[in-house]
Amino acid sequence: MWEHVVMRASTPSDSLGEPLPTMSRRRLLYWLAGGVGVVALGGTAGLELVSHGVLPGKQFLEQIDGACSVPAPSLSFAAVGPSVSGRFFSSHRRREVGYTIAYPPRHGPGDELPLVVMLHGFGNDHTTALVGMTPAQAVALRWDGHLLTAMALVTVDGGDGYWNPHPGDDPMAMVVHELIPLCQRRGLGAAPHRIGLMGISMGGYGALAIAERNPGLIAAVAAISPAVWTSYAQAHAANAGAFASPAAFASGNVIAHADSLVKIPVRVASGVDDPFHPGVAELLPALPTNSVTVVSGGCHTDPFFLEQEPPSLTFLSRHLD
Image 1 (cartoon, one colour):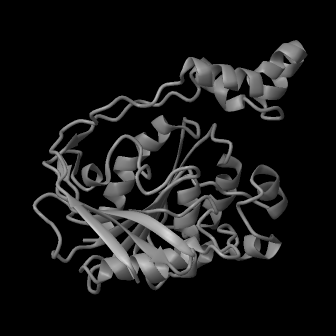
Image 2 (cartoon, one colour; image 1 turned 180 degrees about the vertical axis):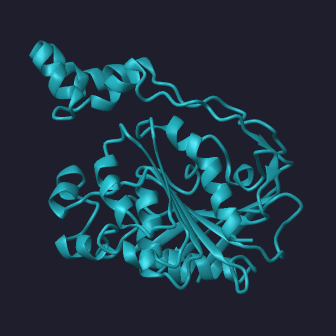
Protein backbone atom coordinates (compact mmCIF):
# COMPACT_ATOMS: atom_id res chain seq x y z
CA MET A 1 0.00 0.00 0.00
CA TRP A 2 1.57 3.27 -1.13
CA GLU A 3 1.71 5.88 1.58
CA HIS A 4 2.99 9.42 1.99
CA VAL A 5 3.45 10.78 5.51
CA VAL A 6 4.07 14.25 6.91
CA MET A 7 4.71 14.79 10.62
CA ARG A 8 4.13 18.06 12.38
CA ALA A 9 4.38 19.22 15.96
CA SER A 10 1.14 20.72 17.24
CA THR A 11 1.14 24.12 18.90
CA PRO A 12 0.28 24.03 22.62
CA SER A 13 -3.03 25.64 23.40
CA ASP A 14 -5.43 25.96 26.29
CA SER A 15 -8.38 27.36 24.38
CA LEU A 16 -10.28 26.74 21.19
CA GLY A 17 -8.35 29.45 19.42
CA GLU A 18 -11.17 30.49 17.12
CA PRO A 19 -14.88 31.20 17.47
CA LEU A 20 -17.57 28.87 16.26
CA PRO A 21 -18.70 29.54 12.69
CA THR A 22 -21.35 32.22 12.36
CA MET A 23 -23.95 32.61 9.66
CA SER A 24 -22.87 35.10 7.02
CA ARG A 25 -25.26 37.50 5.33
CA ARG A 26 -24.93 35.50 2.11
CA ARG A 27 -25.77 32.26 3.91
CA LEU A 28 -28.69 33.98 5.62
CA LEU A 29 -30.07 35.10 2.27
CA TYR A 30 -29.56 31.61 0.87
CA TRP A 31 -31.58 30.10 3.69
CA LEU A 32 -34.27 32.72 3.32
CA ALA A 33 -34.55 32.09 -0.41
CA GLY A 34 -34.34 28.30 -0.21
CA GLY A 35 -36.19 27.61 2.99
CA VAL A 36 -37.70 30.16 5.28
CA GLY A 37 -38.52 32.42 2.33
CA VAL A 38 -41.47 30.16 1.53
CA VAL A 39 -43.18 31.65 4.56
CA ALA A 40 -43.67 34.87 2.63
CA LEU A 41 -45.77 32.94 0.17
CA GLY A 42 -47.92 31.25 2.75
CA GLY A 43 -48.22 33.77 5.58
CA THR A 44 -49.13 32.25 8.93
CA ALA A 45 -50.07 28.93 7.34
CA GLY A 46 -46.64 28.74 5.70
CA LEU A 47 -44.94 29.49 9.01
CA GLU A 48 -46.90 26.69 10.64
CA LEU A 49 -45.82 24.23 7.95
CA VAL A 50 -42.19 25.26 8.32
CA SER A 51 -42.34 24.98 12.11
CA HIS A 52 -43.57 21.41 11.82
CA GLY A 53 -40.93 20.44 9.31
CA VAL A 54 -43.29 19.99 6.35
CA LEU A 55 -41.54 22.79 4.50
CA PRO A 56 -37.77 23.36 4.70
CA GLY A 57 -36.30 25.82 7.15
CA LYS A 58 -37.58 24.50 10.49
CA GLN A 59 -34.12 24.32 12.02
CA PHE A 60 -33.30 27.82 10.76
CA LEU A 61 -36.42 29.17 12.49
CA GLU A 62 -35.33 27.41 15.66
CA GLN A 63 -31.93 29.04 15.40
CA ILE A 64 -33.64 32.41 15.13
CA ASP A 65 -35.95 31.87 18.11
CA GLY A 66 -33.25 30.25 20.26
CA ALA A 67 -34.50 26.66 20.28
CA CYS A 68 -31.10 25.51 18.96
CA SER A 69 -29.13 27.36 21.62
CA VAL A 70 -26.93 25.22 23.85
CA PRO A 71 -24.38 26.37 26.42
CA ALA A 72 -20.84 26.61 25.06
CA PRO A 73 -18.57 24.25 26.99
CA SER A 74 -15.58 25.66 28.82
CA LEU A 75 -12.65 23.83 27.28
CA SER A 76 -9.02 23.59 28.25
CA PHE A 77 -6.20 21.49 26.94
CA ALA A 78 -2.82 20.27 28.09
CA ALA A 79 0.22 21.00 25.93
CA VAL A 80 -0.77 19.03 22.86
CA GLY A 81 1.22 16.18 21.38
CA PRO A 82 2.38 15.76 17.78
CA SER A 83 0.22 14.89 14.77
CA VAL A 84 1.15 12.81 11.74
CA SER A 85 -0.70 13.40 8.48
CA GLY A 86 -0.38 11.38 5.30
CA ARG A 87 -2.11 9.76 2.36
CA PHE A 88 -2.45 6.19 1.16
CA PHE A 89 -4.09 4.52 -1.79
CA SER A 90 -7.21 2.70 -0.63
CA SER A 91 -8.05 -0.36 -2.69
CA HIS A 92 -11.50 -0.38 -1.09
CA ARG A 93 -12.23 3.25 -2.02
CA ARG A 94 -10.22 3.06 -5.27
CA ARG A 95 -8.56 6.40 -4.62
CA GLU A 96 -6.07 8.13 -2.39
CA VAL A 97 -7.34 9.11 1.05
CA GLY A 98 -5.87 11.50 3.58
CA TYR A 99 -5.58 10.86 7.29
CA THR A 100 -4.26 12.45 10.48
CA ILE A 101 -3.07 10.61 13.58
CA ALA A 102 -2.91 12.73 16.73
CA TYR A 103 -0.94 11.67 19.80
CA PRO A 104 -1.80 12.66 23.38
CA PRO A 105 0.45 14.82 25.57
CA ARG A 106 3.88 13.38 26.32
CA HIS A 107 3.46 10.72 23.63
CA GLY A 108 4.45 10.36 20.00
CA PRO A 109 5.17 7.94 17.15
CA GLY A 110 6.43 4.61 18.40
CA ASP A 111 4.28 4.62 21.54
CA GLU A 112 1.68 1.90 22.01
CA LEU A 113 -1.72 3.39 22.79
CA PRO A 114 -5.45 2.76 22.55
CA LEU A 115 -7.01 4.27 19.44
CA VAL A 116 -10.11 6.33 18.65
CA VAL A 117 -11.26 6.39 15.02
CA MET A 118 -13.15 9.65 14.45
CA LEU A 119 -15.53 9.60 11.46
CA HIS A 120 -16.45 12.90 9.80
CA GLY A 121 -19.87 14.15 8.77
CA PHE A 122 -21.31 14.75 5.32
CA GLY A 123 -19.35 17.30 3.29
CA ASN A 124 -16.29 17.09 5.53
CA ASP A 125 -13.00 15.19 5.41
CA HIS A 126 -10.18 14.15 7.71
CA THR A 127 -9.20 17.78 8.31
CA THR A 128 -12.66 18.82 9.54
CA ALA A 129 -13.90 15.74 11.37
CA LEU A 130 -14.13 17.52 14.73
CA VAL A 131 -15.90 20.75 15.62
CA GLY A 132 -14.04 23.52 17.43
CA MET A 133 -10.86 21.56 18.13
CA THR A 134 -8.06 19.79 16.31
CA PRO A 135 -7.45 16.04 16.68
CA ALA A 136 -4.39 16.84 18.85
CA GLN A 137 -6.51 19.06 21.11
CA ALA A 138 -9.17 16.35 21.35
CA VAL A 139 -6.73 13.89 22.95
CA ALA A 140 -5.21 16.64 25.14
CA LEU A 141 -8.59 17.65 26.56
CA ARG A 142 -9.01 18.40 30.23
CA TRP A 143 -12.55 17.60 31.31
CA ASP A 144 -13.91 17.93 34.84
CA GLY A 145 -10.38 18.84 35.88
CA HIS A 146 -8.81 15.65 34.56
CA LEU A 147 -6.88 14.66 31.46
CA LEU A 148 -8.32 11.91 29.32
CA THR A 149 -6.74 8.49 29.43
CA ALA A 150 -3.79 8.57 27.04
CA MET A 151 -5.07 7.53 23.62
CA ALA A 152 -4.41 8.37 19.98
CA LEU A 153 -7.06 9.62 17.56
CA VAL A 154 -7.17 9.14 13.80
CA THR A 155 -9.33 10.86 11.19
CA VAL A 156 -9.63 9.80 7.54
CA ASP A 157 -11.34 10.78 4.28
CA GLY A 158 -14.51 8.72 3.97
CA GLY A 159 -16.37 10.56 1.22
CA ASP A 160 -20.08 11.31 1.42
CA GLY A 161 -21.41 7.74 1.14
CA TYR A 162 -22.43 7.37 4.79
CA TRP A 163 -19.53 5.05 5.61
CA ASN A 164 -21.29 2.06 4.03
CA PRO A 165 -20.44 0.02 0.91
CA HIS A 166 -21.18 1.44 -2.55
CA PRO A 167 -20.18 0.06 -5.96
CA GLY A 168 -16.57 1.12 -6.42
CA ASP A 169 -16.34 2.85 -3.04
CA ASP A 170 -16.42 1.07 0.33
CA PRO A 171 -15.34 3.44 3.12
CA MET A 172 -16.39 0.93 5.78
CA ALA A 173 -13.97 -1.69 4.47
CA MET A 174 -11.31 1.01 4.14
CA VAL A 175 -11.62 1.81 7.86
CA VAL A 176 -11.66 -1.82 9.00
CA HIS A 177 -9.15 -3.38 6.61
CA GLU A 178 -6.79 -0.51 5.77
CA LEU A 179 -6.90 2.40 8.22
CA ILE A 180 -7.05 0.41 11.46
CA PRO A 181 -4.27 -2.01 10.36
CA LEU A 182 -2.17 1.03 9.33
CA CYS A 183 -2.55 2.37 12.87
CA GLN A 184 -1.98 -1.02 14.48
CA ARG A 185 1.34 -1.37 12.68
CA ARG A 186 2.27 1.80 14.58
CA GLY A 187 1.21 0.29 17.90
CA LEU A 188 -2.13 2.11 18.03
CA GLY A 189 -5.18 0.01 18.81
CA ALA A 190 -3.11 -3.16 18.64
CA ALA A 191 -3.74 -5.91 21.19
CA PRO A 192 -3.94 -5.63 24.13
CA HIS A 193 -4.94 -2.02 23.46
CA ARG A 194 -8.39 -1.37 22.15
CA ILE A 195 -10.26 0.64 19.54
CA GLY A 196 -13.08 3.15 19.97
CA LEU A 197 -15.28 4.66 17.28
CA MET A 198 -16.68 8.18 17.36
CA GLY A 199 -18.57 10.23 14.79
CA ILE A 200 -20.79 13.22 14.18
CA SER A 201 -23.94 13.14 12.03
CA MET A 202 -23.11 10.89 9.04
CA GLY A 203 -20.04 9.85 11.02
CA GLY A 204 -22.19 9.02 14.03
CA TYR A 205 -24.26 6.71 11.88
CA GLY A 206 -21.05 5.24 10.45
CA ALA A 207 -19.59 4.57 13.90
CA LEU A 208 -22.68 2.60 14.90
CA ALA A 209 -22.84 0.74 11.57
CA ILE A 210 -19.17 -0.27 11.64
CA ALA A 211 -19.39 -1.41 15.27
CA GLU A 212 -22.50 -3.48 14.55
CA ARG A 213 -20.71 -5.32 11.73
CA ASN A 214 -17.42 -5.68 13.64
CA PRO A 215 -18.32 -6.19 17.32
CA GLY A 216 -15.16 -8.18 18.01
CA LEU A 217 -12.95 -5.32 16.84
CA ILE A 218 -14.54 -2.32 18.53
CA ALA A 219 -14.40 -1.71 22.29
CA ALA A 220 -16.70 1.33 22.59
CA VAL A 221 -18.77 3.69 20.42
CA ALA A 222 -19.80 7.33 20.82
CA ALA A 223 -22.25 8.77 18.27
CA ILE A 224 -23.14 12.47 18.26
CA SER A 225 -26.35 13.41 16.43
CA PRO A 226 -26.21 10.25 14.31
CA ALA A 227 -27.93 10.58 10.94
CA VAL A 228 -30.41 7.74 11.35
CA TRP A 229 -33.23 7.05 8.92
CA THR A 230 -35.97 4.50 9.50
CA SER A 231 -36.54 3.38 5.89
CA TYR A 232 -34.76 3.29 2.56
CA ALA A 233 -37.46 5.46 1.00
CA GLN A 234 -36.91 8.11 3.65
CA ALA A 235 -33.12 7.99 3.24
CA HIS A 236 -33.28 8.03 -0.56
CA ALA A 237 -35.67 10.99 -0.62
CA ALA A 238 -33.37 13.01 1.63
CA ASN A 239 -30.03 11.89 0.14
CA ALA A 240 -30.00 9.61 -2.89
CA GLY A 241 -26.30 8.90 -2.40
CA ALA A 242 -26.54 7.63 1.17
CA PHE A 243 -27.28 4.00 0.30
CA ALA A 244 -26.70 2.17 -2.96
CA SER A 245 -29.92 0.13 -2.79
CA PRO A 246 -32.72 -1.06 -0.49
CA ALA A 247 -30.56 -4.11 0.28
CA ALA A 248 -27.67 -1.86 1.28
CA PHE A 249 -29.98 0.06 3.61
CA ALA A 250 -31.24 -3.18 5.17
CA SER A 251 -27.67 -4.34 5.78
CA GLY A 252 -26.76 -0.98 7.30
CA ASN A 253 -29.96 -0.39 9.28
CA VAL A 254 -28.49 0.46 12.69
CA ILE A 255 -31.89 0.16 14.38
CA ALA A 256 -32.51 -3.37 13.12
CA HIS A 257 -28.99 -4.55 14.02
CA ALA A 258 -28.58 -2.75 17.34
CA ASP A 259 -28.52 -6.06 19.22
CA SER A 260 -25.04 -6.61 17.76
CA LEU A 261 -23.81 -3.96 20.21
CA VAL A 262 -24.79 -5.92 23.30
CA LYS A 263 -21.17 -6.35 24.45
CA ILE A 264 -20.01 -2.88 23.42
CA PRO A 265 -20.37 0.25 25.60
CA VAL A 266 -22.39 2.77 23.57
CA ARG A 267 -23.06 6.49 24.02
CA VAL A 268 -25.57 8.28 21.77
CA ALA A 269 -26.44 11.99 22.04
CA SER A 270 -29.18 13.76 20.10
CA GLY A 271 -30.95 17.12 20.25
CA VAL A 272 -34.73 17.06 20.44
CA ASP A 273 -34.97 19.56 17.58
CA ASP A 274 -32.55 17.66 15.36
CA PRO A 275 -34.31 16.60 12.12
CA PHE A 276 -32.70 13.16 12.56
CA HIS A 277 -34.04 12.78 16.10
CA PRO A 278 -37.13 10.74 15.10
CA GLY A 279 -34.78 8.06 13.79
CA VAL A 280 -32.60 8.28 16.88
CA ALA A 281 -35.72 8.01 19.05
CA GLU A 282 -36.44 4.64 17.41
CA LEU A 283 -32.83 3.56 17.83
CA LEU A 284 -32.52 4.29 21.56
CA PRO A 285 -34.92 1.58 22.82
CA ALA A 286 -33.16 -0.97 20.60
CA LEU A 287 -29.74 -0.28 22.14
CA PRO A 288 -28.38 -2.48 24.95
CA THR A 289 -29.82 -1.49 28.31
CA ASN A 290 -26.43 -0.36 29.65
CA SER A 291 -26.00 2.22 26.89
CA VAL A 292 -25.61 5.90 27.76
CA THR A 293 -28.22 7.96 25.92
CA VAL A 294 -28.38 11.75 26.05
CA VAL A 295 -31.46 13.55 24.72
CA SER A 296 -31.42 17.27 25.36
CA GLY A 297 -32.21 20.61 23.81
CA GLY A 298 -30.39 21.33 20.60
CA CYS A 299 -30.41 20.94 16.83
CA HIS A 300 -28.18 19.43 14.16
CA THR A 301 -25.69 22.27 14.50
CA ASP A 302 -22.08 22.86 15.47
CA PRO A 303 -22.88 24.18 18.97
CA PHE A 304 -24.60 20.90 19.88
CA PHE A 305 -21.79 18.85 18.31
CA LEU A 306 -19.18 20.81 20.26
CA GLU A 307 -21.13 20.48 23.49
CA GLN A 308 -21.17 16.69 23.11
CA GLU A 309 -17.57 16.13 21.99
CA PRO A 310 -15.93 16.35 25.45
CA PRO A 311 -18.28 13.90 27.22
CA SER A 312 -18.09 11.56 24.21
CA LEU A 313 -14.28 11.57 24.30
CA THR A 314 -14.38 11.08 28.07
CA PHE A 315 -16.75 8.12 27.66
CA LEU A 316 -14.42 6.47 25.17
CA SER A 317 -11.32 7.10 27.28
CA ARG A 318 -12.93 5.34 30.23
CA HIS A 319 -13.53 2.23 28.14
CA LEU A 320 -10.14 2.20 26.43
CA ASP A 321 -7.88 2.33 29.48
